[in-house]
Each structure stands twice: as structure tokens, then as C-alpha cells.
Amino acid sequence: MLKEYGRALSYYMRVVRELIFPRRCAVCGNVIDTGYLCPVCRKGFLLQKYVQYKPREEYLAGQAEPLACDVLHSVLLLYKYDGILKDALHSIKFNANAALLPLFMEEAEAALPQAKLRWLGQYDVITCIPTSPERRARRGFDLPEALFAPLLEQRGGEFQAQLLERVRPTAPLFELAPQERRNELAGCFALSRSAQRLVAGKRVLLCDDIYTTGSTMAEAAGVLLGAGASEVHGLALCAASHNW
Image (tube, rainbow, N blue to C red; front, side, top):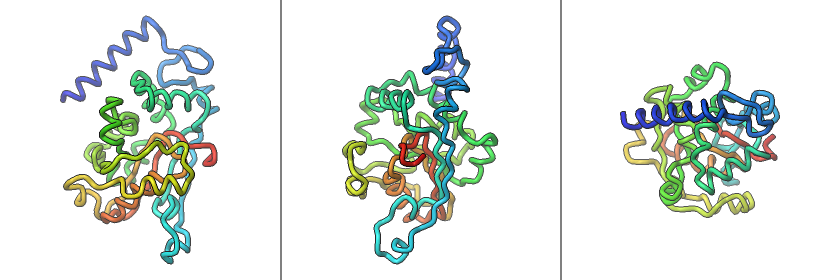
């Protein structure tokens, strides 16, 4: 109840503010009603790339450590991590610019499949990659959850915000090579208490803000599969350039 009241208050305050200072596209400056970009400028960043994965033979033979393609069944990448979107997400992540969160939540919704509730209905459980408790306390929010929770909660009890938890902190990954990323992430996730019964035999959708090499999702997906999930699928707001 308190969370819903806070969201409603934030929404109406934003409406009043935008009546006085109309919202404008971050690229061209045209007045817009929702999101961060106007429909024309959004097209330049839209990716909407759906990838279905198949495990490699060497992984199945136990001769290679898991990559994203080995443990994720599919991933949907909504936007290119580039230009003004990259700058804005950097501001959110590292400068705790929470004012942009509602705009990016609307961008996420704009890029999902048109029949988004039916698309989300494929999954038994929906959750997000968790931020470390230290970073969450410092920022005041968990970015993947802040981006996706208001939308995903439309599916009711299927969304489980705290299904996973970080059991140890990790260094920033953006400057690390793929193998260094995997080493840094190894063992950093665990299921929260009482989560086993929510995962066993279920199709899980795992959401994150940025998809680079897929190492973060692969590590989290391994935990979910180890707990008995039948499939793990990925959803990311933005994807690094080599995924385009």
C-alpha cells in the first residue's frame, strides 16, 4: 500500500511539473508525453533483438565453463547501449540520478512486444539481477528492479523482486575482459530464503539493465537452473555494441 501511494504521488508530481515545464526529447528537444525520446529519435536506438540460444557441444560434454548461450534459452535486447542512452544510464548507475528512472521505465515498456502482457505470460516467474546491498544503499534503488518492477508487476504474483541476492560484492565489470568478468562474478549470486519452491520446474524471466557479454545473466541463470528451473530467459534494457 505504501509503495503504491509513493508511486502515485511521484506520478502526479511529475504531471504537475511537466504541465509547467513540458517534457522534451533528450535528442531533438521536441515536446513529448512519455519516455525519454520522441518516437522518431527512439527508432535510432531501438534494437528489439530476440536471440534463441543452444548450448555448445563442449559445454554439454563438460569441457567448457558455461557461457550465456549455454544456460539461457533466449534473450530479448531492447535498445542499443549507445550515445545519449549510454550517458543517461551511466548517470543513473554512477551518479544515482533517480529522476531519470520513470522515463527509462517508460522506454522499457515502449520497446517490449506489442502484446506485452501475453509475451510476459509465457513465464512462470519474473525476477531481476540484484544489485549489491552496498550499492543499493548508496544509490537508494536497485536499477533493474526500478526499471522493470512497475511494468512486470502487472503480471501479479509472478514477479518476485528479491528472488536472487548478491552474497558478495563484485568490482565494476565494464573494464574487464570476458574471462575476467566470469572470474569476478563466480559465486556472487544465491537464491533468497524460501525461493527454491518458487523456481523448481518453472520458466524464469531474468531482467537486467545492460547486457554486455552475458556473464552476469549466465552466473545468475546457473543458480536458478541449479535450483530446478526448467528454463531461464533474459530481458535487458540495453545491449553493448557487439550484440547488435
